[in-house]
Image (cartoon, rainbow, N blue to C red):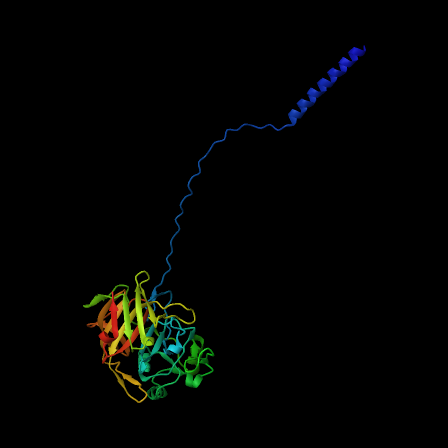
Length: 359
């Protein structure tokens, strides 16, 4: 009996273990073996976006560049000091046109013409000459200077041009820089010029029909005499401070400018000027007083050279209602859109003596 009891106990334990194992197996989740279909990824569809080109239906009249809106600013012409102690100057980068001409001796002075935009800080500003005023009148400009020659003062007093002068507004619309000594330290700004125009009663907006404009084209005008000219040098004197070099960059399509080994930059941004056109106008000069001041003939026209796109064009210039323009025969010659630098060359020295160029 004892033997059978032990045997029965073993059977019960064995059956219980099998039952527990089956229950445990029944608790495990069933995993179905699904057939996995491999689908190759398709290239995403190329969605063509509508390319919307920004429209520029207008062009700036004195630089020929595209503009979203019509620019009706009255031109502002500023006399800028070009003495070596005044360099680098402020506001050159924003000018549409820069004229360079002799003031006395071998020292040149600049006239910066602003129409597309008015400058931030501009200067150093120097005194007026009568022929500076004649150039500014050709643009129907608001003329800015600090000081004047006797002839220029008479013209300004007669009201021949709307103007603002540092002799009357030094410390208000003109500020002195502590970084330089007089007379190389007078500056103004676009904001002060606007305030000054309001003070003297000059409107700084013109009607479209009254806007002065020049002729521009991306294409070179066909003229009789054209030569390759990648490098240009003009010598106003033997002093290297008044010998300027221009170099054409075929990659950018513009000229850089250098004087006495230094690139011409804007003092406010340190950006180099990129010139689309470099122009030379030959005209009579004569000394009129013991100070060496000059009179220039801006009326009769004469020979001219235009450098653009790495080429020299032999053309002429004429005075067209006060505006000095380059022509070939009776047809206007197109400037390249962008900034233009214009030099006045004394006729008694001549273009060929003062201006040299190479390929």
